[in-house]
Amino acid sequence: MSVTASAPRFLLPPDSEIWTSLEVYREHGGYAAAETAIRSIAPAAIADEVKASGLRGRGGAGFATAMKWSFLPKDGSRPRYIACNADESEPGTFKDRQIMERNPHRLLEGLLIAGFASAIDAAYIYVRGEYRTAYDALRRAIADAHAAGLLGKNIFGSGFDFEIHVHRGAGAYICGEETGLMESLEGRKGQPRKRPPFPAISGLWKRPTIINNVETMSHVPGIIANGAAAFRAVGTEKSSGTTIFGISGNVQRPGAYELPLGTPLREIIFEHAGGLLPGRTIKAVIPGGVSMPVLTAEQAMAVTMDHDALQAVGSLLGTGAIIVLDDQQCLVRAAAVIAKFYRVESCGQCTQCREGTGWLHKLLLKVESGAGSGADLEAIEDVARFMEGHTICGLSDAAAWASGWFLRRFRGEFEAHLEGRGCPHDATSFEI
Amino acid sequence: MPLSHELENRIRAEFPKYPEKRAVLLTALHFVQEEQGGWVAPDCILAIAGLLEIDPIDVKEVVSFYHMFHDHAVGQSHLQVCTNLSCSMRGARGLVRGLEEILGVRPGEMTPGGEFSVEEVQCLGSCGSAPVVQVNNEPFLENVALADLKSLVAGLQTRRRAAVGE
Ligand SMILES: Cc1cc2nc3c(=O)[nH]c(=O)nc-3n(C[C@H](O)[C@H](O)[C@H](O)COP(=O)(O)O)c2cc1C
Ligand code: SF4
Ligand code: FES
Image (tube, rainbow over all chains, first blue to last red):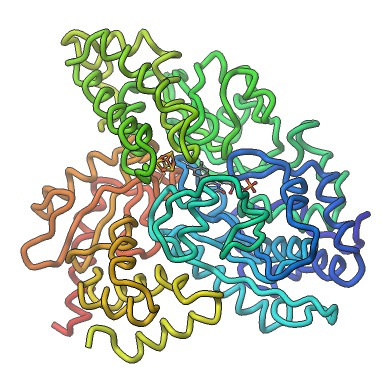
């Protein structure tokens, strides 16, 4: 199945073009996929096409999107909702923002098609509070789509009614966790819920809810317009399609690059991002946002950016947010900065996470200062073990992995700081 | 009256988007902060609780949970400097120190006249253009250099004076 009017294959407009206006988006084929889908494709066939595309979630966990949709109850009871995750707070990550600021209708069209496919009443886009520009762009886009009859009642004369609302968060990383997001949207502290029940059965206001990331939903119009095969034509067998890689840190051209999954990390760093500063070499690379285990230079140079390849080297694709650290930087400092983040962002419900994130941060600062000993390195490992696997959400695991893997993979650098020796890179490294 | 009629109406206009009024809480707090000096005063907490028909403690808890809400006064220009990894790697610590020198306040403090306050924040989602500063939830200032800080502060002062008609 593929519709005749083809939508652009890519999520982002070329170069620095901005397609915020409805007219411009339509000139580029926008809403043709939604129109065809709603007028002439059966909802089940839309879900099948998404399934055939192999689309996996772009929010971090890489869960199969069509499978997630299939968990909704089959009884047809209404209302049911989409929660669209635009909280984007994983350090290093700035890709969803590109879509919302430069191509907001693409997200709306994705939500519209997904909403039709699953008989959804309304979608709530939960945008992190700091994303003012994205919020304004979405609000304008929704108003324009409404005025054009693309949202609201009886869309394309099909009898399908659908609303999209933007909801602003207020600064809390944990609201990106799917159940924390739902608590927050309902007007409470963003403390994650215990599962089961899963959101597909009991989500927003205890109603069936599907939750997907901004980028995930923005792929849907392309899949419907051009077909699953075209989507699968790039990427790997198990990681199909393109994604927006964000790259930052010690590279010449940091930024967002939309490329096929499975692109070699070396190519992203040296071709797209322009390589390192002259005379520098890579020391470490974080491949998917700070929650994902750090890679050594050797691992980074050999790996491709897809789920299987990263798992094979003991890391994860996460949000595809790459942070490059060159040979002049102190990795204990990097680990300490990251540990502070989790300490600040832990929601405090689980003891291991609330206490553990604080200990990790303190221990890493101690080691960095030169006041640490071998016993402190043992303590970091013990705390990391204690934090893993027994908490309500994944923040505790992420905090443990982040610090734990810096230590495991770069132990020599940690040891060089011990017993009063302090930071060997003090003269060249970034400051904390 | 802690909330103007206009503000109350703006909050009420959000109700139809949701099955429960309570879902408007974060939006209401944003509106109040934006229009009433950048923080949520105790009488506003009571007024919002009344409007949404929830307990004041529920509002208080939410105010203290989210980093963007303040239960104490902040500067008219509230400067947030991201000090997460990518920004730190591009000089965020120097920016914090630079602001300390120019304004004479440390993160978490406010200048005596209440004009400026500074806060260190976590990743703002702009790591590709690090380091990043945000002033009062306006669009990010990107690739900020130490040398930009003086003119940034001066610009904000000029804008402030123009706004109060000095
Ligand atoms: C601590 C934590 C923070 C998260 N933050 C985000 C986020 O900012 N954005 C996001 O899309 N997913 C985030 N996730 C993943 C979501 O829980 C969820 O898996 C995702 O939104 C599902 O969408 P997808 O299947 O389309 O990826 C986070 C998860 C955890 C555990
Ligand atoms: S793991 Fe941490 S962030 Fe997640 S629910 Fe427990 S305390 Fe909160
Ligand atoms: S680290 Fe500063 S914006 Fe991401």
